[in-house]
Length: 224
Image (cartoon, rainbow, N blue to C red; front, side):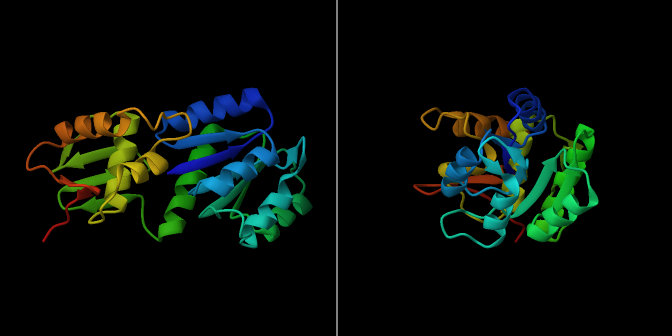
């Protein structure tokens, strides 16, 4: 899952982004509306976490633009407002503007994670447990198994496997994996995808479920 975090408090943004990345969420950070708009014009996000009180405008206007399917922006699958505005009228305004959820600061980080998991399930109409063949992952617990045996995966390896399971049977290019599993801090000219994929394949063992499609990318096989 790739997340856009719009937060004007740089220190808070750094802490939130670190926490999200540690939970295997690829996270890009913007501290102004203008920076967020620039990212939204170029990147397709699964979730946008938007603050409202920003130095160059009101985040609520951005929520409305996304809800109205502004042609200049790539609309995230889900939007959650994360703000200090705690009045009932503010919550109503945020949800009516098009936000899928509304979280008031200060908040427990665990609650934010739970809400992100809930938004992910709502997006795909699925539970937190996903199974393809003998591979099973539990998004809520952050665990993965093959043939009932737990896999010892890093956060990045888990995120990569989760994306393959979510798109089982599809051919996924390295560019697609880089866009959805990594964030803006990743260097597209490095071998990050190849290296992490190699480690994941080694941990999955044989028979190898992730095949290389020459000239196109990679595919997680589905049971025949």
